[in-house]
Length: 325
Image (cartoon, rainbow, N blue to C red; front, side, top):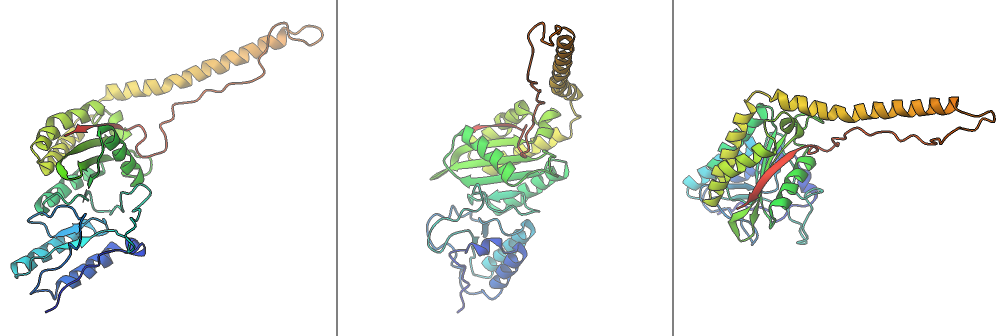
């Protein structure tokens, strides 16, 4: 009897393996196993197993399409008499935690939008949310949904969402700032509780479609009731559906004009300041006495004005919303 084996740890070099190679290796590993369960959950700290889910890529190294393919293969193993679990994670061989990246979010896959690091979503829910998030991306708002186990309040979760937007550069192009991040920090030991945050890039907040008020309305009206009922997938789905509808709305040109006017104010102030300084200099030079001394006080330095800086990070100028549940 042959038993498929999954390594209990991934080396630091393994983190950088191409997702295609990983998916291919997993697929080959599933082929011969027809008579015995796969031993994948070897110790504690692995999250919650979902009854109809078989593939858990908590290292975020397998592309979305490959995850779906592996899920079908593993489900086939179940039907063949071998209940199967495929589990991928990052763990050092010496039990020291590996920092997945500078902020601990892992590696983003180009065609993947939903990252369930808490292992709380069923396979069918994952596929549905992936389709919705991909639709958001096609509609002009590159979207990432991220779930994990972490004790955090609402403010900390909003900051985590901003950090994720920056770390993964969730936007369609550099400086586009048109991304959307939905992040859930779930309470350790009770994943029915936690904090949620929505963060939209400056492009969507500036045109009025997904500003702070609208994001909070989505959380309060679409997400919170589902979260209170323990329906995480339903809450995320509702939020994505509401945001998708907002993206179809006409741009609020009044808000855009106001933003333009506000941005123009520092320039006007700067011009007035510069002109005033020149007038003072000219007046001072014409009022010198015979000895060349000024007839009145003078200015020896020039204080330049600064325009509004929207920042260089992906989340600069973004709006956020959310709460505890």
